Amino acid sequence: MLDLCTYLGVKENEEFKIDGYPYKYKVKDNTLYQSYDKKYYLSTLSVNSIKNVVKLIPKKRFSKETLSFFSFINKQWNWIAKDKDGSVCAYSKKPSKMGNNWLPEPADEATPCFDDFKGTLFKEIHWEDDEPIFIDSYVER
Image 1 (spheres, rainbow, N blue to C red):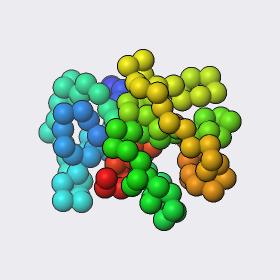
Image 2: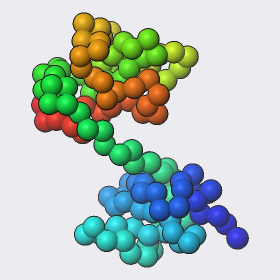
Image 3: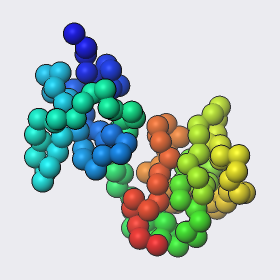
């Protein structure tokens, strides 16, 4: 029998999204459930139709100062991440983690870094984060 959690790469009761579908999903007792109106119901989605699972990362809680800074970052910069040395940089496209740094996509423009704010802002962003921060998930610009 197919282990749905292993097949989808998720943990039991972990919320996730599936590309192309507007709902949140989770697996319980090897059964797929989808959310609707903040409740979970048995999903009729065929497992064979699932192409890409997107794990939902709990939102961080940022200080008012950091959120204020986010709102003033130029709209062309959509992502922000902290390198291992503590440098915080913004990116127009989602960067990838490699070595000790987050690296921009090859087509990305020069990325601004905010080293002047080390230790005062961005305390909630860590090198150990699995994903960079998508700024528009936190502020309207």
